[in-house]
Image (cartoon, rainbow, N blue to C red):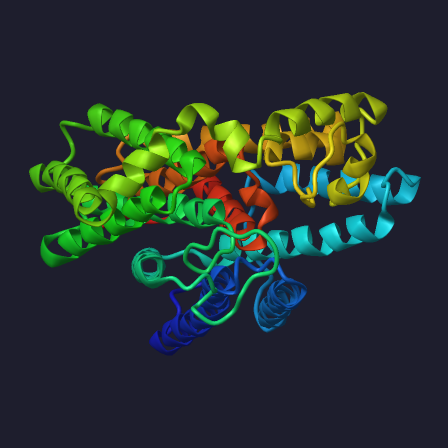
Length: 433
């Protein structure tokens, strides 16, 4: 027969939970810091920054494992873990069966995707409390605003060098910390919905709401100013989805929340007119030639070549990370440019991972949107729904942009994208207050 625990036991249990919670927060905020540092390292596309991403994610995982040994082992499930495990199995098959056209490139891809997986796993395990959501919202919003402000200043005073110091090798369209302006747009596509969605909910009041709208508007403005047409199209899709969510929740959204969206639109238009109206108009006027101009008239030819490559290895593909090594022998045109990415993430995945990997990706995305949409019913007054909506909007932006670019081949953007996916797919775990 058991009775109630003595007060001292209750205090000890609470203290143990508090210690465990603090330890998990260290891992969570370590992962957040890693996600925020990678874009500043030119998108983490260079060997040293890729190593930093892989080593830091492994170190954070080790810290988490050590913490688990000191307490009861608990592992939280996420629906996306299943397709992620299948994807890992397919890559393992490529290595074991010799399907990969270049084993070293596939092994390098394994390390990189392993880092993405570890970060996602740690976020799922450690993101548990509404207070953490508030901190992450503040961190991502402040960070996005700071990077966007830096990009604006750099755009006005650019000398053709990253951070005004480093001259990139080869062709570059620098914007912010990225060599490629399209990848900067990809980062902002994922960040600007976070403060915007926050400003529309019941959790935003007074000055925080106004600051959130300002941060979101500045980030969105730079999507246009950076000259990325794919980014502009992605932004439009995100706004359409957000408007649909607003209309569906119209009766539940507070008046000040609806006013915040109007303020966002007015501020966005005002910033356009003040900073870059002529530049934006001239850039958008060239939309009909987008596919020719962005990659020097080669995107259509690349797409056609890729569709011819697919039947050669339709099931498991040519191997993860092997596009740059395999494509030259199938290229149907002459160019002096080094084509190391497909400028279409879907076709590149189809070529590298075959039909098996492609349909695993479809399964992955289906789980993301199924889980996210289930939480949207009361998103304006439910923290779980608000988090799911903000994450889903960022995911939608990258998915649209990936039709004409390769944001998911940029480690900094890919890592943040996959983290948004697992957050969108998480079970409701936050209690609204």
